[in-house]
Structure formats: structure tokens, C-alpha cells
Length: 253
Image (cartoon, rainbow, N blue to C red; front, side, top):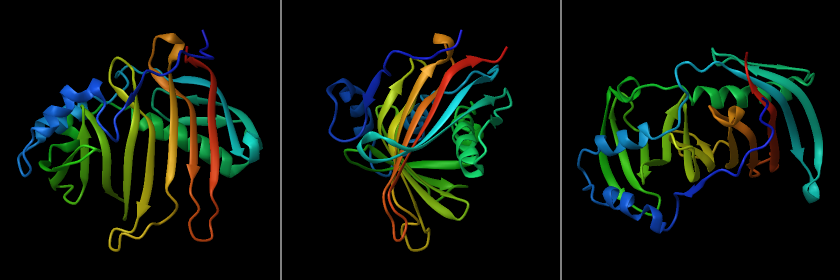
């Protein structure tokens, strides 16, 4: 049956000062010596991410896009329907505005592609990992090999920071809170910043994401039900706020 609502996400805070509930796990990270091989610790965090089972069959529902206005009122609201197939391709219907149509499809695809289960060897087999410093965000993981120049931070079996070179730009993501699905974690609140790889200059305003996930048909897989994106002003581009909602969620027959 369609999943309209869900119990609140089991929320885990991973950024900032140590949470007593995470102290034991964090102490493991703190025991990693700077300069040592931290492949095992990074693998543990990587494999703790929530991913869909290989037999994922797709799902469907209604999609809603809102552009935030003053006093919590929406400046603009558009509704449509969507299907995410077993092949992870997202199809959006009933949305005439090309930019909004693209934005909705992009969010669905981006979430789906990050749920694909790939082994650590498939993704990182050509890389090496050495430990840097440890701060409130976590232990730095310095990448060598194929993806040399990338960096991560890990804390309590969560990847709390990603600094990656992608398609001629650098993206830096800080995860602040996660959702515990019981079968791995999903990022709940996080920031994202794109920058020039040569100069480090920002290519746009920092974006803050707040994601809400629900188990499809109350049993899973877990899928996105809401994403709030708040982007800071940058240069001539004003600050913005978009809300993506996905409702009446149901697995494909």
C-alpha cells in the first residue's frame, strides 16, 4: 500500500563535539596514528552506508516542487507524478516547466545512483588510504593512487566529509546528521560547496540539504520523501530555497 507518512527518522548527530553514544566508535578513529594505513577504518565507514538490495524493483508516486517564499509560504508550487524504474531511471510526468521537470528528475536520479551497492574493491580498489589529523569532524583520510588528491573524514563508521575532484571541479560535503535505517546510514543534513580545483575559489553559494527518508510500504527499501535545499547568495546570484516532496510512494507492481 502507498506510504504517505512515516515515523520520524532515527537521527544520529555525527558532526561537532563528541556524542556520548558515539564515544566508543570514535575512540577507534582516534587510535589511528597519523600517517598510518587507515584502509580498514575507511572500508568500515564505506560499507556502513545504506544501499538498496540488488533486486530493487523501482517505485512511483507524486512529486511536488516548491520555491520558498517569506513567512514559510511558497512562491511557487508545481505537482506531477514520477516513476523510478528498476534500472534507476527517473521519469517525471505532468510538469510542463522544463527547468522544474529537470530538477525533479535530477533529485530522484541522484538519490537512486547513491543507493547502488558497489563493493569497496569496485569503487576504491585502485586507491590507497592514509590517516591525517583528527578533529571534531573526524579522522582525515588522504587518498593516493587513482584518485590522489581526494580526501575524506570518518567518525563513528560514518563518512563525515567528502572532498572529491569531479568533472573539472571540486566538491566538498560535510555531513552533520544521519538517519539510521538499521541496515546502514543515510545522510540527513549536510552542506555542499563547489570550488575551482586550481584556486580553491567558490563556484557558487554553499548549499545546505535536509533529507527525509521513509521505508517504502513501511518495510523498505528506504526512499527519499522530502529534500529541502537552501543555497546561500554568491556574487549576483541571490539566496534560494527549494523543497522537493515525494508522496503516495508505492513499489512498482
